[in-house]
Image (cartoon, rainbow over all chains, first blue to last red; front, side, top):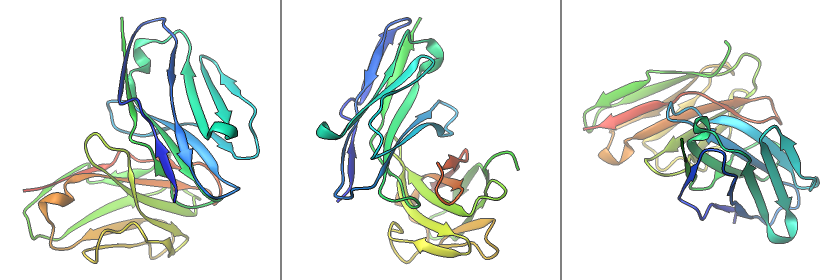
Length: 114
Length: 112
């Protein structure tokens, strides 16, 4: 069975703080893809990153960074120096093969206060 | 078009009625997905098309739900005999065959 768990339902930080959103996944497939999406109050899901199961290199994009660890089945997302515009619900998702359905976690609602 | 377009953006219907939700994918995207999102939850997979055919419809909750994509572009999600429990935001996404999915703004369905 495939499953994605985002244990943090809500996180509240003050602007400029760093924040890490946790994601733990379960799958029996050896090839899979992991994703993070952002859902701002407008409702549209915005793609942030895709990683495949063979690439454990961490990735940094501006203030965003991702830490993929197969040993712990985790794909955590860190926002450095958070800003009010980062306030949104963030979803981690798993896809078991090259095409096909995404399995989403429950989401983490991030609130960044000025 | 520039992005995935879903119409209508909001739909209110009475219990027992039939509804159709439309999705216009990004031009050239062969894969199209329907998801349903309830308040406070992550999107839940319904059905996935590759071209005109449904490659995976395992997420459709029952036979009241049906989706088509007759020409491999626009898709319509059809719900018969709607129930109050069908109320949710219905999301459509499209992608190239192996790429990341791009989502539309969703249709908020309310069954009263």
